[in-house]
Amino acid sequence: MPTTYDSYAAMPQSLTLEEMRSVHDAILTEVGSDPDALELYQDLIESSVRYAKFRMDWRFLNVEEKMDIDSDRTSAHTSCITKLNILARCLRTQQKPATWRDTLGDAEADPYIRKRLGDFACYLAFVTALNAR
Image 1 (tube, rainbow, N blue to C red):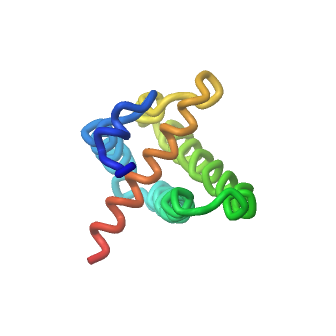
Image 2 (tube, rainbow, N blue to C red):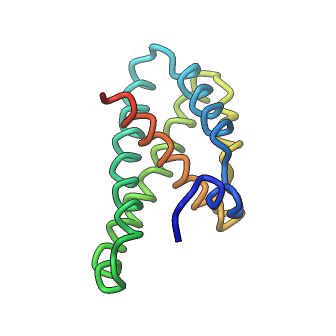
């Protein structure tokens, strides 16, 4: 079956492109030119690009290949979530609201939120790839 944005948008807890853009804009505004926050943001981007590669490849792998990389993919996914949390914590210690983190949701409260956080990581990788030309 072909993949489309509409098929993604119909999935539980999906984010619209505008929601992802809004969250990303909020992150960038709060990070500003603070060197510590910029470093954490860069860590998030690198982690997101790594995870997005796993997720893109996943669709083309057979069951055995998926089993071989599943722990690495899960680790990359967890790393993205951790990087989001660390960045939000850093910004909050600087008295910035980081409400964007609440917008993305709590993976412990709803299992689909973990997927949603992975979706946002893929959005960050998408924006990074577009700007790499």
